[in-house]
Amino acid sequence: MSDRLPEGTHIGYVHLQVRDLGRSLAFYRDLLGFREIGREGATVLLSATGALPPMWVLTARLGARPKPPRTTGLYHVAIRLPTRRDLAQVFQRLLAHGWPFQGFSDHGVSEALYLPDPDGNGLEIYRDRPRDQWPWREGRLAMVTQPLDVEDLLREAEAGPAQGLPPGTDIGHVHLHVADLEEAEAFYCGVLGLEVTQRDYPGARFFAAGGYHHHVGTNIWAGRGAPPPPPDAVGLLAFTLVVPDEAAWAGVRDRARAAGVLLRERPGVLWLRDPSMNPLRVTVEGRFSGEELEV
Image 1 (cartoon, rainbow, N blue to C red):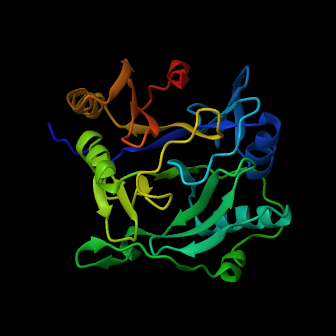
Image 2: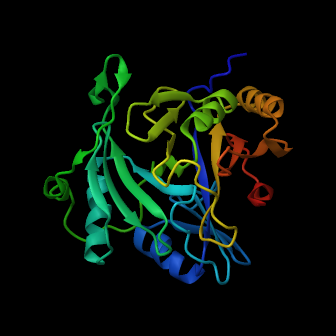
């Protein structure tokens, strides 16, 4: 059995702790266009399609405080749109509502908008270029950070207020603050079975399955040895890595057991934390169950 995760591996839902559920829904549901598909107590499930599985799980915690600077945890969640026109439509909608942006980048492999959610959680909204246009250097992927031509992007937008999100919208990747890049690589490659796609980006390392540019990004920009955020801070409660079949899932389970990092398991669900205490779940495609939302 290969210890590399197969093509078809992808990021599933992201579970965030938020301070005010109504404020978060006004952003994720009413402005971005995700659709509410379930609610229980202080937890709401959202998707782009209006059907399971979710893409976002939002759980409100009364009195949750901002994530302290110079801690590990979420850097950003990246929402991937199918086309450049789709990206332009969402960009136009956010501009019309006066939402603040933190940056605009052309990464060679993609075009990306950066912004905070209402709690300051980082978001990237992006579209991929076709794979045959991705830049390479000495046989390795070479993502870059160049200015994005936002005026050219906006010319792609259609007139009139577009609502909702297009079919094919998903979570393309998750980018995390970690305490140590070597430890991160040992976990995301050695335990999970992802492959390094770029290691020469300053202070960062990127991992993926199936030849994608990255499903997980890690960086030490919060400081080498940074501690995890406190449990009452807004931010990441977990992200999910979805594998295409039981064999791939069992491989992760066995490697996690051998490494002593498996917190608990149920059929089709593994609960793990990386060496920087970032929480994640590994699930099998098509096996979503509400029980896995337990923190």
